[in-house]
Image (cartoon, rainbow, N blue to C red; front, side):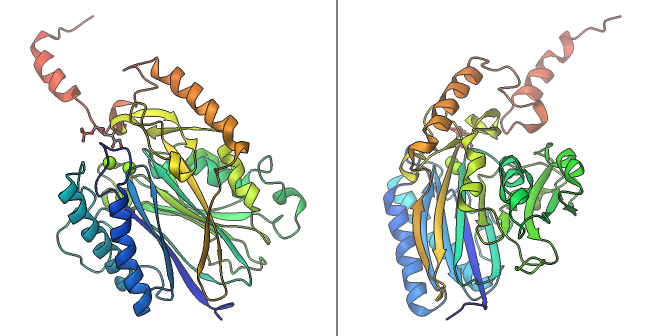
Length: 375
Ligand code: F6R
Ligand code: MG
Ligand code: MG
């Protein structure tokens, strides 16, 4: 029994080939990853696992006793991605191996292409957790929903009426450009927090912690978001990477329904076609997480789990597979339609410095001679 002991939950994801284009993951890649992780579970490297997909991203969800940044667990994920890449190459899938940026594994997948959300937790008697998986967007897309879960009283009733939550939470925010971080307390510093995270391409929520006096230690994260590419390239180029997140729920944390509630509003995120457009993020079950229209609109999948006293993953429950989110989906389609009508104009197309694809330098160079000074 691991209750009261440390257990690590790792979500490691990569796009290692799309089928077709950038739309979804071929089932043979899932099977290949399952074989590799199944063997590792048999050998005791990990306690349990599940292989999920969101759009063209393969998602490895694992529990183990090895802590965050474990070379063994990261190496295992790397091996699974490598093996699935071989299958992707055989099938001629699009962009086979695209997120495996290095040839040789060097102890940690950070900076090598895959995205990682991991947390080491002291296992509670009952441990409800949600893993979120987004496609066609970037880590800053989690700023608004994570803020709402842990700091917005209009979203999370518990902040107002549950004595176990009333003291609020602490947010670890990363400044991507200057490669530094700050911890802000809510509700005291709510406005400061919003001043930062509203600029979601520069300031991203990395983790949320409880405060002193909570039944969970103030140094143990209760939410974490993947930010690998941002971390790696800080100060140069803010790379987009379809993000994942882990959120713990209940018992002094947001209830499951408070964790899901922010996604009833399909907020605008950047990404979509060619990583260069704003569009709504649509909450969908896994089988609908296959971006099609204009390579989108961006999707978010929520998988619900109970971690058993032995550390096993009891799930997944495909949480957005629920008519209660039909309205958000319809709204997202409506917003997608509205945004699309802008064609190549901002704010549908991202501002110049945030585009992943651009022809502008070439166009300017060609026109240089023809530009004349104006008074
Ligand atoms: C967005 C995305 C796609 C591609 C687009 C063009 O994150 O992955 O929208 O950017 O399909 O892809 P290429 O340049 O590979 O043809
Ligand atoms: Mg892709
Ligand atoms: Mg993707």
